[in-house]
Length: 88
Image (cartoon, rainbow, N blue to C red; front, side):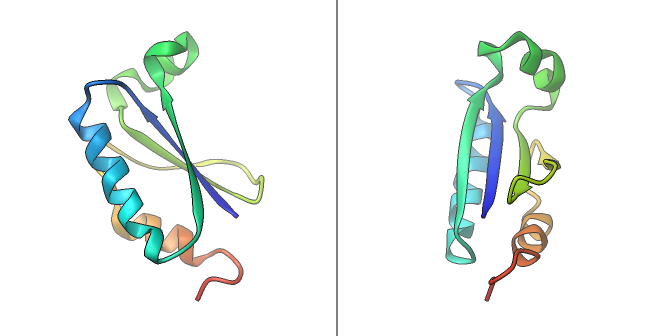
């Protein structure tokens, strides 16, 4: 199972745009999305403050991979999704 984490913040139109673009890819594959507000966690804020939104993907508990920031890299996410077993 693929799980994405979107590091985001309130009132961020780029964050909203990335989430919407990611949701449009649900027709390709089954995946989960967690949205985390970096402003609620000092450690996340230190890591991602100027990069938000940041999309990280993880497959079956493996090491998480940062896929893109600012804008959804659709091709990179499609490749990530296609690499999972059972993808049609």
